[in-house]
Length: 354
Image (cartoon, rainbow, N blue to C red; front, top):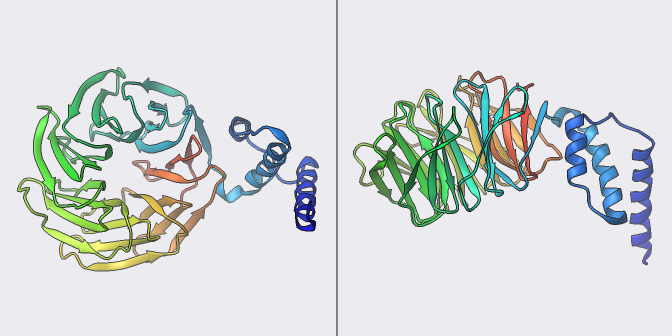
């Protein structure tokens, strides 16, 4: 063994002894359960466990208030019900779990998809939960009974993103077949097919008035559509240097936010299409965005979780946790809580949101 390897081993042993000595704050029961679920065999796993327990517990500013454990693989998506009492998550284990947001107890576990579930979205009235998966299907669920109420089929690829219109009449779906389909939810039929992206469409979002739809994709473009008119996009917004993974309208409808693998968030004027501001400071890829309902804050997730002041562009909080990559993020309707879907099988809930 080389001197360099000996030194590294010595440092690891010292750190492990430091952890064994009880230095640093203790773990919560949920954190202990999480660490135990991710333990690895052997000496390396033992040292890694001790180190993770110490650094996990030492990151007090990054610790979630609640940890929901139930998924057995990557969690891709999370969404709050309109009343804020429940939230839904889904992922690579094909399960959709509807949780009591206060207690973390599962209300329903919904199973019908045969591949990884990429996105869930509650209808505005909270009575329906839509789920889209790699099996190319969109399932509609009755949230009260937890039963399957319908299935939408037309895409030739994975369902990557879903969004209900504000009145709940339409559901927009985006796919890696490069198409956006707008569905009439009540009649269970296609209303419009929007084609304009030259690559995977990763994200869709309705404007607050329901008249427009914004989309973003791997072609690095942000497209704005007139939903009723269909046809060609109203605007094509260019400014990103890599794949787009998230788009979102501000609650007042005046601003569009877009983000992706180029590590920046661009805020656009929703009427003129001009760039208002670029938010820079997030390290690594950005996979998800969500506005607080008052429009004052914007949350972005990826390698870390950032909360921004939307008006000034200032970072209000940079949350780094031991739960890994952030795949999905959602503000509660009252803006007091923030939930995340994590690569490492967990759903997190933060109460101390600035």
